[in-house]
Image (cartoon, rainbow, N blue to C red):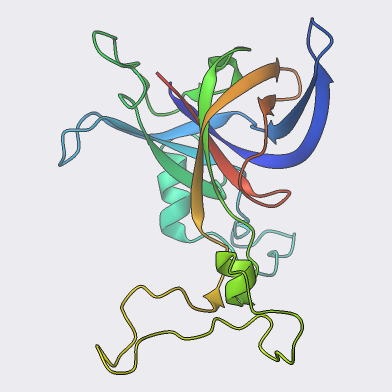
Length: 227
Protein backbone atom coordinates (compact mmCIF):
# COMPACT_ATOMS: atom_id res chain seq x y z
CA UNK A 1 0.00 0.00 0.00
CA UNK A 2 1.24 3.49 -0.74
CA UNK A 3 -0.49 5.68 1.84
CA UNK A 4 -2.80 6.25 4.77
CA UNK A 5 -5.14 9.01 5.99
CA UNK A 6 -4.32 10.59 9.34
CA UNK A 7 -4.67 13.62 11.57
CA UNK A 8 -1.88 16.05 12.42
CA UNK A 9 -1.46 16.03 16.21
CA UNK A 10 1.37 18.56 16.50
CA UNK A 11 5.15 18.77 16.67
CA UNK A 12 7.68 17.32 19.09
CA UNK A 13 11.31 16.29 19.14
CA UNK A 14 13.07 12.96 19.43
CA UNK A 15 16.70 11.89 19.73
CA UNK A 16 18.32 9.36 17.43
CA UNK A 17 21.05 6.85 18.25
CA UNK A 18 23.72 9.48 17.62
CA UNK A 19 22.10 11.80 20.15
CA UNK A 20 20.93 14.29 17.53
CA UNK A 21 17.78 16.26 18.28
CA UNK A 22 15.25 15.82 15.44
CA UNK A 23 12.09 17.95 15.11
CA UNK A 24 9.14 15.76 14.14
CA UNK A 25 5.49 16.15 13.24
CA UNK A 26 3.25 13.54 14.85
CA UNK A 27 0.44 12.11 12.69
CA UNK A 28 -2.24 9.91 14.22
CA UNK A 29 -3.44 7.42 11.62
CA UNK A 30 -6.00 5.02 12.99
CA UNK A 31 -6.65 1.91 10.84
CA UNK A 32 -8.20 2.93 7.52
CA UNK A 33 -10.90 0.62 6.13
CA UNK A 34 -10.87 -0.12 2.40
CA UNK A 35 -14.21 1.02 0.96
CA UNK A 36 -13.67 0.39 -2.73
CA UNK A 37 -11.04 -1.06 -5.04
CA UNK A 38 -10.75 0.13 -8.64
CA UNK A 39 -8.50 -2.17 -10.64
CA UNK A 40 -8.42 0.19 -13.61
CA UNK A 41 -10.22 3.50 -14.11
CA UNK A 42 -10.79 5.43 -17.33
CA UNK A 43 -7.13 6.47 -17.35
CA UNK A 44 -5.91 2.93 -16.68
CA UNK A 45 -4.90 3.66 -13.08
CA UNK A 46 -5.44 1.26 -10.19
CA UNK A 47 -6.90 2.96 -7.12
CA UNK A 48 -8.09 2.12 -3.64
CA UNK A 49 -10.59 4.15 -1.61
CA UNK A 50 -9.77 4.57 2.10
CA UNK A 51 -11.78 6.04 4.96
CA UNK A 52 -10.91 7.79 8.21
CA UNK A 53 -13.04 8.56 11.27
CA UNK A 54 -16.81 8.16 11.62
CA UNK A 55 -19.87 10.22 10.78
CA UNK A 56 -23.03 10.53 12.83
CA UNK A 57 -25.84 8.27 11.71
CA UNK A 58 -29.57 8.44 12.22
CA UNK A 59 -31.05 6.16 14.88
CA UNK A 60 -33.22 3.28 13.74
CA UNK A 61 -36.93 3.97 13.55
CA UNK A 62 -38.58 3.36 16.94
CA UNK A 63 -35.31 3.43 18.88
CA UNK A 64 -35.47 4.82 22.40
CA UNK A 65 -32.33 6.92 21.98
CA UNK A 66 -32.72 10.36 20.48
CA UNK A 67 -31.44 10.97 16.99
CA UNK A 68 -28.25 13.08 17.31
CA UNK A 69 -28.60 16.67 16.25
CA UNK A 70 -26.42 18.32 13.68
CA UNK A 71 -25.26 16.95 10.37
CA UNK A 72 -25.89 13.22 9.87
CA UNK A 73 -24.69 10.85 7.22
CA UNK A 74 -26.85 10.37 4.15
CA UNK A 75 -28.42 7.05 3.29
CA UNK A 76 -26.17 6.68 0.26
CA UNK A 77 -23.06 7.12 2.44
CA UNK A 78 -24.37 4.59 4.95
CA UNK A 79 -25.05 2.11 2.18
CA UNK A 80 -21.62 2.60 0.64
CA UNK A 81 -19.96 1.98 4.00
CA UNK A 82 -22.13 -1.07 4.70
CA UNK A 83 -20.57 -2.83 1.70
CA UNK A 84 -17.26 -2.72 3.57
CA UNK A 85 -18.86 -4.00 6.77
CA UNK A 86 -18.97 -0.62 8.53
CA UNK A 87 -21.85 0.51 10.73
CA UNK A 88 -21.05 4.21 10.21
CA UNK A 89 -19.58 5.89 7.11
CA UNK A 90 -16.11 7.44 7.44
CA UNK A 91 -15.76 11.14 8.07
CA UNK A 92 -13.06 11.47 5.39
CA UNK A 93 -12.73 9.47 2.16
CA UNK A 94 -9.70 9.59 -0.13
CA UNK A 95 -8.70 7.63 -3.22
CA UNK A 96 -5.03 6.66 -3.54
CA UNK A 97 -3.19 5.22 -6.48
CA UNK A 98 -1.82 1.73 -6.00
CA UNK A 99 0.93 2.08 -8.61
CA UNK A 100 2.02 5.60 -7.60
CA UNK A 101 5.13 4.63 -5.63
CA UNK A 102 5.84 1.10 -6.82
CA UNK A 103 8.40 2.00 -9.47
CA UNK A 104 9.34 -0.25 -12.36
CA UNK A 105 9.25 -4.05 -12.18
CA UNK A 106 7.45 -3.97 -8.83
CA UNK A 107 4.28 -5.84 -8.05
CA UNK A 108 1.20 -3.71 -7.40
CA UNK A 109 -0.31 -4.59 -4.00
CA UNK A 110 -3.75 -6.16 -3.99
CA UNK A 111 -6.55 -5.25 -1.58
CA UNK A 112 -10.19 -6.14 -1.29
CA UNK A 113 -13.17 -4.33 0.21
CA UNK A 114 -13.21 -4.69 3.98
CA UNK A 115 -9.44 -4.82 4.45
CA UNK A 116 -7.75 -2.45 6.89
CA UNK A 117 -4.64 -0.33 6.30
CA UNK A 118 -2.53 0.52 9.36
CA UNK A 119 0.66 2.44 10.13
CA UNK A 120 2.49 -0.89 9.74
CA UNK A 121 2.91 -0.12 6.03
CA UNK A 122 5.66 2.32 7.04
CA UNK A 123 8.98 1.69 8.75
CA UNK A 124 11.56 4.05 10.19
CA UNK A 125 13.71 5.44 7.39
CA UNK A 126 11.00 5.42 4.71
CA UNK A 127 10.73 8.47 2.48
CA UNK A 128 7.21 9.90 2.28
CA UNK A 129 5.26 12.85 0.94
CA UNK A 130 2.43 14.41 2.93
CA UNK A 131 -0.59 16.16 1.42
CA UNK A 132 -2.65 18.50 3.57
CA UNK A 133 -4.50 21.82 3.61
CA UNK A 134 -2.51 24.87 4.67
CA UNK A 135 -3.70 27.14 7.45
CA UNK A 136 -6.31 29.65 6.32
CA UNK A 137 -5.22 33.26 6.94
CA UNK A 138 -8.16 35.10 5.44
CA UNK A 139 -7.82 38.25 3.34
CA UNK A 140 -4.21 39.51 3.46
CA UNK A 141 -2.18 42.24 1.81
CA UNK A 142 0.72 41.85 -0.58
CA UNK A 143 3.41 42.11 2.11
CA UNK A 144 2.19 39.01 3.94
CA UNK A 145 0.72 37.19 0.96
CA UNK A 146 3.53 37.69 -1.54
CA UNK A 147 6.43 38.96 0.65
CA UNK A 148 6.53 42.40 -0.98
CA UNK A 149 9.05 44.79 0.49
CA UNK A 150 6.63 47.67 0.96
CA UNK A 151 7.53 51.35 0.82
CA UNK A 152 10.04 53.38 2.88
CA UNK A 153 9.27 54.00 6.54
CA UNK A 154 10.58 57.60 6.59
CA UNK A 155 10.85 60.82 4.52
CA UNK A 156 7.12 61.48 4.48
CA UNK A 157 6.07 58.19 2.97
CA UNK A 158 2.50 57.15 3.79
CA UNK A 159 2.29 53.95 1.73
CA UNK A 160 4.27 51.56 3.91
CA UNK A 161 2.59 48.24 3.02
CA UNK A 162 0.85 49.06 -0.25
CA UNK A 163 1.69 47.34 -3.56
CA UNK A 164 2.51 50.52 -5.47
CA UNK A 165 1.88 50.75 -9.20
CA UNK A 166 0.02 47.74 -10.60
CA UNK A 167 0.44 48.45 -14.32
CA UNK A 168 1.77 50.90 -16.95
CA UNK A 169 -0.53 53.80 -17.83
CA UNK A 170 0.18 54.27 -21.55
CA UNK A 171 0.88 50.75 -22.73
CA UNK A 172 -0.91 48.41 -22.21
CA UNK A 173 -3.18 50.67 -20.10
CA UNK A 174 -4.49 47.76 -18.07
CA UNK A 175 -3.49 45.41 -15.27
CA UNK A 176 -1.57 42.38 -16.56
CA UNK A 177 -3.16 39.00 -15.86
CA UNK A 178 -1.60 37.18 -12.93
CA UNK A 179 -0.55 40.36 -11.12
CA UNK A 180 0.13 39.64 -7.46
CA UNK A 181 -2.53 41.44 -5.49
CA UNK A 182 -4.13 41.33 -2.02
CA UNK A 183 -6.60 38.50 -1.53
CA UNK A 184 -7.43 35.26 0.23
CA UNK A 185 -4.32 33.58 1.61
CA UNK A 186 -3.94 29.98 2.73
CA UNK A 187 -6.47 27.12 2.94
CA UNK A 188 -4.92 25.50 -0.14
CA UNK A 189 -3.91 21.94 -0.91
CA UNK A 190 -0.16 21.49 -0.40
CA UNK A 191 2.14 18.49 -0.76
CA UNK A 192 5.49 18.36 1.04
CA UNK A 193 7.88 15.85 -0.53
CA UNK A 194 11.05 14.06 0.53
CA UNK A 195 10.17 13.71 4.19
CA UNK A 196 11.60 10.94 6.37
CA UNK A 197 9.77 8.67 8.78
CA UNK A 198 11.74 8.73 12.01
CA UNK A 199 9.59 6.49 14.21
CA UNK A 200 6.46 4.33 14.13
CA UNK A 201 4.33 3.77 17.23
CA UNK A 202 2.02 0.93 16.17
CA UNK A 203 0.30 0.65 19.56
CA UNK A 204 -0.92 4.27 19.45
CA UNK A 205 -1.17 4.48 15.62
CA UNK A 206 1.37 7.32 15.45
CA UNK A 207 3.79 8.28 12.68
CA UNK A 208 6.73 10.55 13.52
CA UNK A 209 7.73 12.47 10.38
CA UNK A 210 10.87 14.59 10.26
CA UNK A 211 10.21 18.30 9.74
CA UNK A 212 7.00 20.27 9.30
CA UNK A 213 3.93 19.46 7.20
CA UNK A 214 1.07 21.61 5.98
CA UNK A 215 -2.02 22.28 8.03
CA UNK A 216 -3.20 23.24 11.51
CA UNK A 217 -3.41 20.98 14.53
CA UNK A 218 -6.05 18.27 13.98
CA UNK A 219 -5.89 18.89 10.24
CA UNK A 220 -6.48 15.91 7.94
CA UNK A 221 -3.41 14.75 5.97
CA UNK A 222 -2.57 11.91 3.63
CA UNK A 223 0.84 10.27 4.03
CA UNK A 224 2.10 8.72 0.78
CA UNK A 225 5.05 6.40 0.45
CA UNK A 226 7.72 7.33 -2.09
CA UNK A 227 9.18 4.74 -4.42
